[in-house]
Structures are given as structure tokens and as C-alpha cells.
Image (cartoon, rainbow, N blue to C red; front, side, top):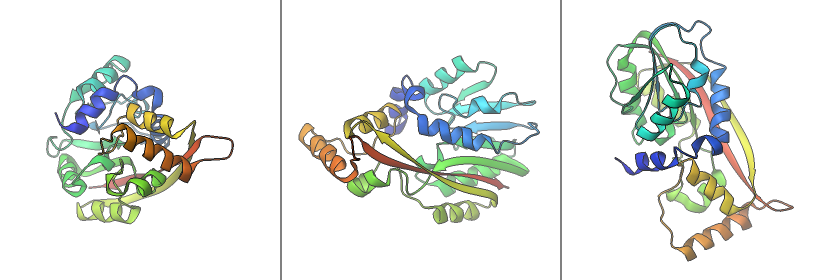
Length: 240
């Protein structure tokens, strides 16, 4: 199991309670689910099912997959009528699916173009991808402080357009949204990130963490107490 998989396994129990932004993205992405829910479909990186629930009912084959076994277990208990599988995002059958769905996942890929090329080969001719993912501007305040150790990879929207195009997709529709959230304290923000598995690379000692929390509070504190954080994400529909 990779370090990231382990993080999401650990977060499975608390994910739904703290993934408010991910739920908002899932609800927003669901507006673009096709009116005619036909064909063979797979959701990749389904987690505990925040987006999966919007796909019900689907008239033909629908699979929900994630590499975290505990996330899949949670999703299976919530939506047992859907076929759940523990599966790597890059290991799906060629020319099998009419639809690939993905929400809050692609930003974690270290080689997104390679992954999208695999997804394209898994679609039948004319098949489509509907994806929502975080882009540069998500947690921008924290990224400025942590630099290369930031928890969310920093690819802007133009980067993603190029990645999809180079992977052979024709982009049909896109939209970007930013959400501004407040947290009771810097510590509460970091606890929130930990509970949804979105922790960064550094493993700070207590004094280092205290310094980071103080720096964030100084930079992002708001009148009356608490701190701010920005989440920026997009939704995209593309065709093979």
C-alpha cells in the first residue's frame, strides 16, 4: 500500500463528516451527469460515495472503484446496490466503458497525462469522461507557506487543458469555481485536512508544527477569530 492509500484508509471513518468541500464539488459535478443514464459506466476514486450517490439509478452496468479498501467498504455499506471494487485507477479494461466518472481524485495523480491516456483507451469510441478536481488556487494560502511541500499539487487550469488534449481527449465543457471557507483556528484547519486524508508531505516535530500554525494564523487570520482557506476546483466533460 502506498503512503497516499494508507492516508485515505485512515481517513475513511471520518471522511464523510469533514469533506464538506468535496461534497460541494460532488453536488456541483452532478449537474452534468447525463439525463439518459445508459451505457457501461465506471467511477474512479469513488472514495466513500459522495459523488456515487448522484449516479443512482443507472440503467446498465455501473461500477464504483477506489484503491482504498476501507473507503470501498464504507461506500459498499451506504450504496449496496452499486458494484464496488478495490481497483487501481490505471488498471481498467480497454474499450469497455461509455462513461468514466471521477470526483476529487485527479489532482492526486503524479502522471495525469499517462493516466488519462489509459482512461481514453478504456472508453468505447465516442465515450466520455466527466471529472471534477482541484486546481491551482486550492489552499493557496497554505501553499504559499509550504511551497513544494503543499498538500494539493499545483496545476492551473491551462495545465489541465493541455494534459487532457495531449492525452487525446476533445474537451466539450469546462467550468471553474472557488469556495472560501473559514475554520475556528489554524489547528482546526489542519485537523480537517488530516481527517479527509489531504495531508502534505512534511512530518513536523511539535515546535515545527507550532511555528507553522502561528505563521498561518498571522497570514490568514480573520477579524473576530478563526482563519480563512480557499478551495478552487473545476468540472470538465471530455470525449474520446
